[in-house]
Length: 348
Ligand SMILES: [Zn+2]
Image (cartoon, rainbow, N blue to C red; front, side):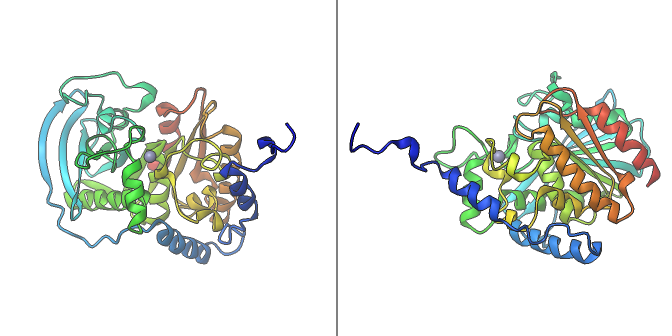
């Protein structure tokens, strides 16, 4: 109709301008092929600043044992410990009968789900009742089967640590409210979760039965995301399995639906995901992807791993980087991942 502006010719979608800005980012601290150590220090410093990781002030852990039971594969104890004043974590400490102290140990992190009860394959409401867990997400069981101890930590905003006091909360994502509030206070949810991993390591170090030289972190999706950023910053982490969380930012976080707990303000001006994980080089790293993952597309994941391999090569440790690709979608692939990781743990 004459005089009416055709909306299809207008740039109304917010993504239009973000796409333009994204193409202009110079990724100032991306791997440049120079000297590894100084680059790693510069990017680590910047990431810690962007993620606003709260300082671990070494508060008392106040460890409490909530229950302890025998399991077909060993013993599982549910514990709580203080992450920071006002924030306690709950976790399952899984000790395998097939292992010997000091135990090889992995911290296991679930992504967006009903929570850490999936890690030991029990009902959320009754932890004595076994359940079937899809997509090999029973991480603690997978560790125990391989003689590895597991500390399955509930991440902030998920499962038992979902918000339960505010008058209203998001209907869609249990992380949403906390993400907004953290940003308003100059924090990020991811930074808070990294503090929780650091405190979980404090707890493990305090036990005296953990092989701190073979301490790993693993997780799928939102658990994998915490794994890789924590590994970039926390030097006590010695091995990682980030699963279904790796791709270039432009093809994943910036194009497909991802919630706010993936957000690292400004990071695209400094680095891409490969650089973040590159800070962990030369540590043993198994990246797990799903061939049909709809939110971390496989072609982009492969490009990230290719870039990451260049960083590992610079530290003479390309053998410590493995990429395994499962035949399905966004899930964990336990056999593929552990078959790649276990020989590297043996060599450590
Ligand atoms: Zn989230």
